[in-house]
Each structure stands twice: as C-alpha cells, then as structure tokens.
Image (cartoon, rainbow, N blue to C red):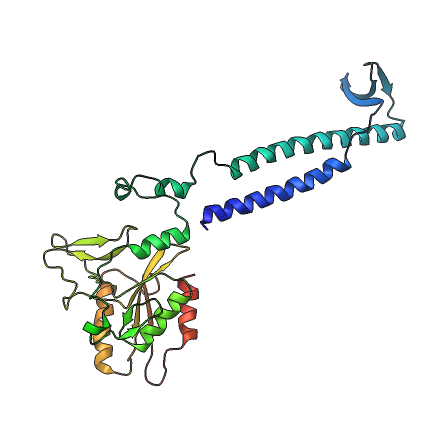
Length: 301
C-alpha cells in the first residue's frame, strides 16, 4: 500500500473515532424544552442577565439569584454543546466523503502512473512514497562491471537470495542481509570518483545519484574504474551510499591496493560515514551478521 494511502486510512480512522465521540456527546446533550432562554446584555458598562420566554418576553434575573442562574446557565451550555457537536459531525462527514471518494481525482502518486507513457521520460515525479521511490531507484540503469552469469564468470559464483552472483561469502552475507531487511542495493556499479573537466561527464541515475562518468575514455571494465561492492539506499532519507567491504585486512598487498582505492574516493571529496560505508574482517576476526545489522540500522533505516 502506498504511503499516502496508509496516511489517508489513518486519517479516516481518526475522523471516524472523533465522530463516534461526538455522537456520544450528542446523545447526552439532547436539549430539553426549556421554558426560558438565558441571555446576556450590556448596559452602562455592566452585564445583565435576562430570561426570555417563548413569546419573547424578557424578565430580569438578579445576580443574587445564584440557584436560578446556575440552572439556566447549564441549560444554555448543554444546548450550545449540542449544536457545536452537530456542526462538527457535519464537517467530519464532508471530510470523510472527500477522503473516501476521489470523484475521479487521482491520488498524487497515481497522477504520474496515469500519464501517457510517452510523457513519463520527461517528467520527474513528485512526492513518491518511500517504497515507490525505492522501486524506481532499484530499477534505474546503473553501469555494472559484467553480467552476473556464473557459467561465464570464474569469480562471481555465489548466488544471493535476490538472484545476484557475488564473489565472496562475506559479500553474499551482506547482500542477503540487505535483501532480507528490505534495503535496495546494486552490486558492483562502475564508478570513477574523479570528475575530469572537459574529459568526462558524470552519469546520474534518474534520482540524481552519480553512478559513474561517461567520456570517450570511459570504460566500465577499465583498471581505472572502481566497482564498490554495493551501492545502497536508505528509503526513508533517500540517501545512497557506496559500501566497501574489506575482506582480507591481514593481507598487506590487499590493504595497500584498497587503501589506494579509498584515497582516490576521499581525494575526490567523498567522506567515510557520509557517502561511503566501510566494513572489514580478517582471518582472525570474521564478519558477523550482528556487525552488518548494526551498519544497516545506523545508515539505512
């Protein structure tokens, strides 16, 4: 169900509860046929009380007659509460009618869905619900390193719950935790962190996130092109992160190679904890699912 529809349902339920409470008030404030109505009049800077009978005749009510004032004041109050409850119920009924029946008018999300297909590529939809935004983000065409066909790939042989093929058990665990917790992700997007003026142009997905750079020299398979392990999305904040997992930090050459990769990204203006998530393990400290869940909770929920 779309977020707007969920919100609408909550509002309808709240209004119906309020209407029930007002109807209860209405039943308990049924005005009695009072012989007199209490009225207030200002005269020479003072307020005076009068009782008006059915014929319109007014009788002065002295302030010393507290018992009579109390009786007629309570009657007037009950009558006015009754009328106010009727007005509010009428207003709620109009709101419920508008919310329950669009009279042919689409919800905000449906406006985009109902556009002619030929126009949609030219329109940036507004106010997408979180799940709708995430679905569009997941469908966006990012450049990937290679097709995930394990029969033709000697490295990516481990199949995730979603059906991707990844290159390590840790990547498999991360991918499956992302999938099972509902976090959208892309695996190994092509990425060149440096913007080279005059030589390359950033490649954005349809939500404004850089997924690479295109130029005559751009090659998603080039040694200069980076492929962060995951590109992930926080559906609530709509912020995307690159997630790098360093799986062999006990290997000096591996550490040097990945440090150089991270320095390239940092030198290009990206920040660990802001746009980059980094996790790590070694042979003595393997990756734990609790660690992954902590990252997901901190950045992606």
